[in-house]
Image (cartoon, rainbow, N blue to C red; front, side):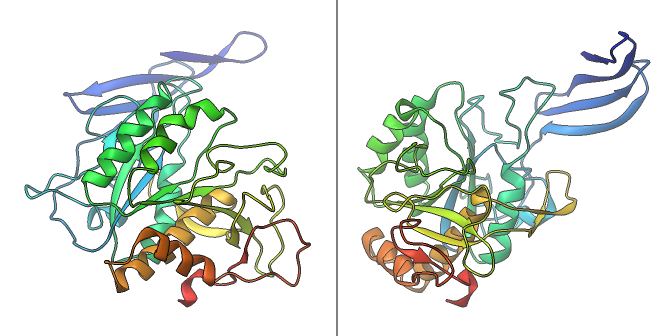
Length: 311
């Protein structure tokens, strides 16, 4: 349990972890008496029942996914027994539920669900493989790529990053060994990542596209990263409609949300000819970009895509 007090050390609220059975796990929000329940948040849940939807498989690497929400249940890639093919590389268990607990178990950051909600809306025929990224040991990223490839994914959507190049060594080595395209976010630090790198966005990898956020007019969005060498394209990703981990609607912005838009576009292109190589897919994606008349030179390596849904 975590007790939250004011400046006079009076307890105002609390948070408590609670388990039900072997799989269900909750974070209870409590009143100041540390007994009265305000509401509960799901931290881990069993997979919903269902069948494989078919369609092109796309792996999503983030803080996890609230896969029990209705919007995802029919788009989860599954094996022959109906078991979804995602995995939690943080806790090393089969349930990659949304929650980055780097700040502590009582303060989870819920990122993956909102991002993935954009993807399933724009690529309704694709099958989703959710992975919770391995923050405790980033060398597991190699195994993550291998698992995605074995499950049949051709596209890897990655709206995340860090300042440490060493975090991404295993990822880069694994990616170079397979015909899979990684679409990664440039980040939201308001800087040139050619000069001040963010990884994996600043890596020189042929099987990767780095994307950032633009407004609807083709201007780099405020706070989004850029780079004339390492940021390939930008797409409109400001104030997008999203669904959060509770199933509530909202809006969100930033380069993280550019990733699902570009990944969805790539999935739709690849679905028209699944036999194309990743090099061919990357070329087709980048061919849809052009210089923006409203942005200066040196911001992007290729250009901007005004409407990723126009393909």
